[in-house]
Image (cartoon, rainbow, N blue to C red; front, side):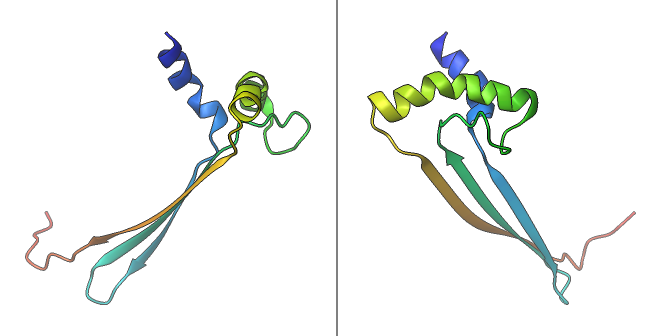
Length: 98
């Protein structure tokens, strides 16, 4: 039950951003560069303009409890994850479009 609750609340405590840049090459290939930035902090932000509305309220209620355990009891700090990857879609000159 705790595991289910944890998974269902994950969206409220994450701040992941994925951006993508596309480039079409003269050869017909397309390259896509992805950048992921994810932060898990668990600090309430009641009066900041960062988190607003219903999701902001959910985040603040959740982190008021989990943040105290995460930072206070466990002595953990925020975790930042950054990742970058590239996908290349090769031009298939033999492809037939119908």
